[in-house]
Image 1 (cartoon, rainbow over the protein chains, first blue to last red):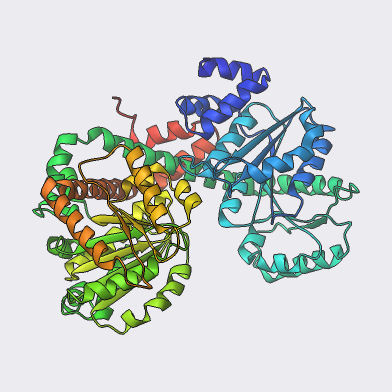
Image 2: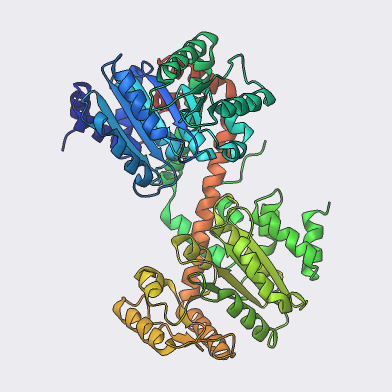
Length: 316
Length: 316
C-alpha cells in the first residue's frame, strides 16, 4: 500500500495506475483525499477543460473521441472524464460507448476515466470537479468532460469545465424544444452534431433563434457549430471556437468569476462538513441518550431537546 | 392568512382544511413548522399507526381501502397517508389508485393525504414522520401509511409506523426472491394479498421458509396472513394481528425502543440543521470573499481557506 506522497510522485512521473488511484481517493473522499487536494491544488489551472452535454443519441462519445484524436496532434496528453449521473452503480451506457474509443485506448497519451453516481459525499459534481482538478495538476494539457443528458445534475457536472458545449442533432426539433432555455443559456458553444444528416442547417437556424430569444449573460456571442465525426467536418472549427471562448473568458474576467464561484461553493461545502464533524465530536453520547428519553416520555419536544444539548439558539 | 395558533385551534376542532394546511407546513418545512411540531408533540402517541409496503401490483391501495372501511366500524377517525417515493412531482401512481377509495372519500371520518418526493429538507421519511405525528396529535385513532415499492427509501418511509406490513401476492415467487432478506426482516407482519387467486398457500409456505432462514430480531413471531379485498377474507385476521403486535411491542419495550431510535434520529437532524444555520449566521460575507480570492490566486488551497475562516480544526 503506497502512501499519498508516493502516489503523487509516481503520478507526476506519468504512471497511469498511480493517477487512477489518486482519482479514486478524491472521488470517493477516502482517507488521504485532503492531502491529495492540498498537494495538487497549487499546480492546477493550466489545462484546457471542455465539457460536453446533450440528450442521449446526440453522439457525444464519438465526438469526444474525434476531438481527443485531434487534440493529441497538438498536445502530448489528453484526459477524458465520462460521467453518467443516471447510473448509480457502474458507468453502464457510457462505458459501452467507450468501446468506440478503442483507438484512443491504445494511445498512451490519452487517459480515460469513467465516473458514475455512487452517492459520493457532496455530490457528483463536486467529485467530478476534484477529479478534473487532480488531472489538471498531473499535467494533462486538455481535459474533456462528457455527461449524458440535459437535466440539472448533468449541467452541474459539466459546469466544472471552462467551456461548456451543448450537443444536439439535425431533426431533433422536439428535443431542442425540450432543452429548456436555462440550459441553452449555460452553454458556451452549441454544436449540431451528425451534421452530415439532412436538416443540419435548419437545426442551426432553430438554435440561433432560441439564442436570440434569451437574455445574453455577458458579451460572449454563443456560436453554433456543425460537426460530423463521420466526415470530420467541423472538428477544427469546434477546437477554434473553444480556443476563442477561452481567450474571451480569460481576458474579460469570466474565467476568474467562474473559478471564484466554484471555489466559494467548495469552501462553503468544506465548512459545512467541518462544523458537522465538530458537532459529532463535542456530542456526549450519554447526554444525548438522557435527552432522547426525556423526549420519548414527552417531558421535552425534539426542538427543546436541541436547546438542551446546544443551548438556546442565537437570534438574528 | 391564519396564524399557526388559529390553524391549530381549527384543526383540533376537526376542520379538514386546517389539518391539511398544518400538514403542508410540516411536510415542506415552511415557516411555522417548528411551532406546529412543538405545539402538537405532547399530544402524540395515541394513534394506532400501521404501514404497508410491497411491490407494485400487490394491491396495497385496495387493501388499505378495505382496512379503512373496517377500522371505521370500530373508531370515529381514520387517516390514510399515501407516499410515493418514486414520484418527484405529483403523487402520480398513488393518486390514480386513490380513485378506488372513492367510497372513503365520502366518509367524513376518513382523511386522505398523498405525499410525493419533492426533495423535502431532511428527506421523505422525516417529512412522513412529521405528517403522521401531526395527524396523531389531531386525534386520528388509526393512521395507515402506504408506500409503493420495496427499496430502502420505501422501507425508511414505512418505518415511521408502529407495525409494518409487507404485502406480496400468490404466484409472485420471483418477486419474493427479489425481496431481500433484510426487507423481510423489517416486516412485523407478512401479508399474502389477493389470496383468492391460486397459489396463496404456496406463497405462505415460501414466506414461512424465508422467515425461518433469517435470524429473529426479537421474540416476535412474524405471522403470515392471507387477505383478499375481493372476498373480504383475512381483513379481520390482519386487524387482529396488528393489535397483537401492538400489545407485544408496548409490553416488551419494542415500541419504546423504536420511538427512541426515531427521536434520536430526529434530534440529530435538528442539531445538524442548527449548527449549519449558526455557521451561516457567523459567516462574514466580506471575509469569505477575501478568502475566495486568495484561493483563486492560489495563495491558499480550499482547506487552508476553511482554517482561515473557522480557525484550525480541533483534533481527536
